Image (cartoon, rainbow, N blue to C red; front, side, top):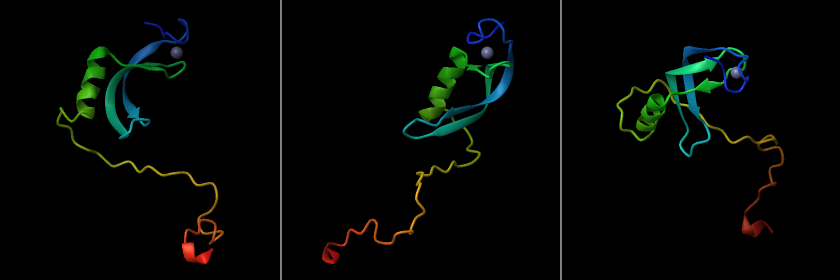
Length: 94
Ligand SMILES: [Zn+2]
């Protein structure tokens, strides 16, 4: 079986991969998900069965053990506290 993205150049093989729904409102990652992975470009293809299983995990319909918690940060380009009055919301100070 060949990769859809590589137009038949890349070969896909069955692997246990990580599924990441990082853009979801409530981000989650599922480890050890069976997928067809292209050894050329790394594209992952999940079967319909796997996708519906992931949906069930997401909706809490499947009992799974939680391995760890992911931490999500908001990227701040300026060091916090560099200008102490930058975000002064104190009305009496104006
Ligand atoms: Zn590929």
